Length: 532
Image 1: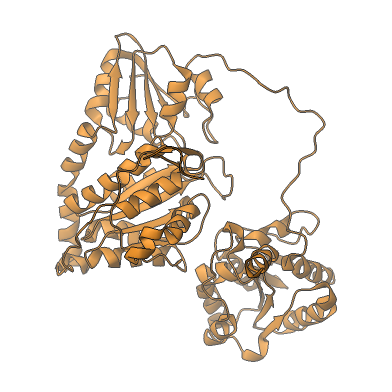
Image 2: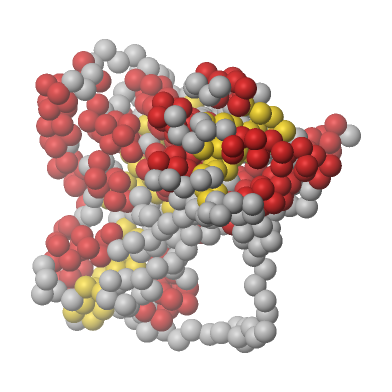
């Protein structure tokens, strides 16, 4: 499938990163599954060379633990890759920012896949801000080949500057395929295990480490001016200049605009010299970037308020959503063509839970029970079961972030809401629900937590779930009364039993947990097919 010609492979952007990481001699990849980053770890898990080399590739409980484990591997002198989607950056922000202060030993790449247009996410967060905040280099490839090439350079740079390197992909690059010419695997000798006291971030040491990070900034700025991934092409003087970031460069080249110059940006911090050179040759600059107006803001500060800079902030490009060839073409003055007429009288088809899914039976029972109460609230979480907010169930009142169902239910109960019910999946519970449950136990909150356990991380393709077969022990270990940790099997034939148990636990004045356990129907199909 992925072999095209001798020496070439047809790869997703995610797969290009994964192959490059293997070829660059990583000893471990650490990640929690999240679209559009999941395929990176899956590729490494299946790769024969990675298996032969014993590359660690088990899924982590969440992005914070992944970041910390990768940092530990770097401390031990070996190269590591940590992967996540953009909202996962929020989860690992503490160790991520501090890793720039401790510095690294073995090369460390933090790969984040942003999701403009929110295809499978809660927001359009742009992770380049995190790189700027942490004051480390950021690579943003424009194509699959560049993604492959950048990984090797990023590992080298990480070890040269002794800082982590952030690499940003977007959905369109992560999940599209193109030819990649690999350079082949390289043998990388591990560095000695670190004995640098800079890893101990006591205030006195942290202050010294922070000054070291500040001292590295000129080298990073120099890199951005010299690195070939940032290239400036000038054709004249006195017209429109374009700054194209990452994948946006492809849309600009497709539009073939009549411009004075194009600055292709794929490495940050921004190359201020190249930006000023473009500005000197141009009457105005259009910034084209997939995500938030990160570069547009920075360019305005470099060139001053009087220089005309256009982009998402000025309306030259849509303020939200991912870029398209049409939106870029329109911004550079090229006509766009509608290949299909407007669709009329076509009803939307929102996603639904799979036929036979155990979540369906959970919501069917829950809806019947809460109909007997005056002001029930059911707080949801991130997973397939979030679809319980849509017809035909319309059960959920909220869905904010991983683990928020339990703590929001606790807060609502503190405010007098009854019943306050949390619905959370098995993988999400171990990701970030356990601490909320401990809070609820410690305060004696009057909530009912329903863990919908389908024995896998279903929404992202069926990866291992960290707490499988451990949930009863986890809940009782956190202090939930064992009498009020109940297990049910979500099947139509069991609906009456489930309803009765839900009523009993709502009536209990304290923290109760109901574990609804039945394997994901899609996972079950795959397992049965494998047996055959």
